[in-house]
Image (cartoon, helix red, strand yellow):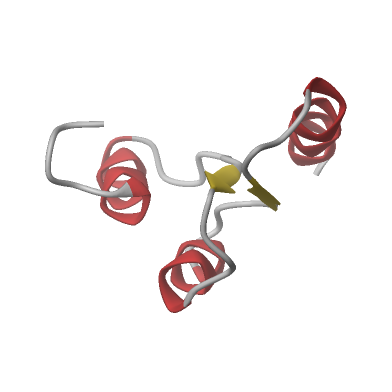
Length: 66
């Protein structure tokens, strides 16, 4: 991500280049309005940091299979 922009803004920029792009949200914060907005745009599962290899693997596999 560019300095000064968050994951939601990054995802919006990605969608302008590639509509429908899948993604997984990983954050150290609880599910916020910005996380919910990203999910409404099509971003996928939310996993809370710190996450382990199993939880990120399951999230990625779930999004790829969707």
